[in-house]
Length: 324
Image 1: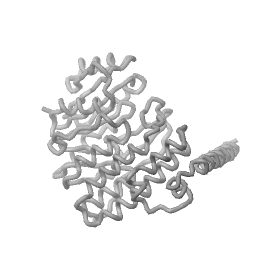
Image 2: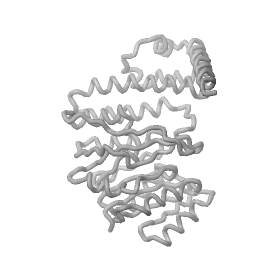
Image 3: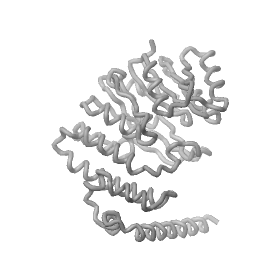
Image 4: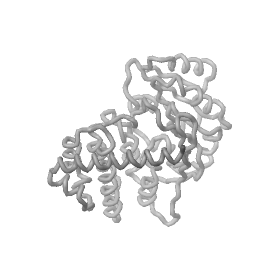
């Protein structure tokens, strides 16, 4: 049995799938299995997966009868994974050719390895490089909080696990956003041995129109609240949890504020749901926006959103004129 099991959930990914699977096929360390979970695609994804599985024994195809979402697909992959280590790769992304080799060198005695990534647009433009920067003095929980603050905690593909650490933990099929973060909190509630690889071995593609992240979620606040409650559970025995949770609660308020301003959601319903979240109730943020949410002044919130959009549109026009 190969050392590494790499789970790839796939749905209507024919435009990006070849690049993704080729980046795995050409790995400098060949000791892995790629578990391709074809999730009811209506394009050529299944045919592409079958070709790889027929020509390379490292590629194993699982065909789902019905689409079960990313969480269901990852769970199906976990049920089949036999490697000592488990990693996840999304079908619209791709990895560096030394991805497996770098992970193997990083694990040593670790249970979980966090690593860096590059962000790219769908047309191939480089958008940034994100590398974990962790203080050597930070303890286990503080390290996780730092990774979260840097945007290097929640994504499933930004870390790899020992399979026995995952155990019977599975992704929630009830969530279709932030399920990665909730899964990580559950797996890491019990202290684990962490390693950090300060190297970009993953390439994350943003701007995919079919991405769940790009869709508008009217229940966004509730989903953020599920993730916040998972963090509270993760930190329940940590004596310095209050400062971390307060910072996260305040950050979540800002996330929901701008989500409600930028997305086409009903302001009254959206900000009423924000008011009901635990993180809003525990936040220390005090400003006009929060006062309006607490007092239910939805007309004022609508005007604030309109003003925000006008300023954003004006800034975009100024920036566009500066390019011409």
